[in-house]
Image 1 (cartoon, rainbow, N blue to C red):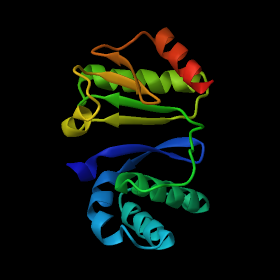
Image 2: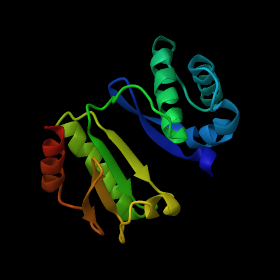
Image 3: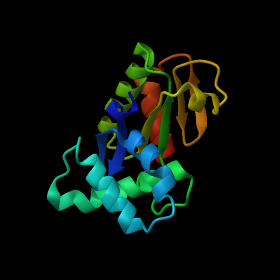
Length: 165
């Protein structure tokens, strides 16, 4: 199922859904963990282009974004905080409320023109690392903002504007 999973990443100024990113990173982690960046980038582009379309003129931007995500996955340092500092995480296995929270966050981000890293963490073991006891949970820049409910859009907008600075 991981190969059908869609991961949202930032490519340039846009949030883009990529099919199978986590599965490809898992498969490549051991063999490509210490390879040169350009080799890893090209391998990621080639593997992911089988299930995703990357316009030729922005292929380099996709390659850089994939390399960044691969380094994050490996826990290695990576260049560039592409979002300007706002990191949003929705914790939840994909129930109706979790998906609604993610959707409403994207709507609010579009309304206030916020470029941020938005990640929906669905793996229960990964969710457990955050120490929250209810779902959906919302973290903004590592701070738990909400647990067990979907906050009103006005509150989401307030929190995101505050995080944006």
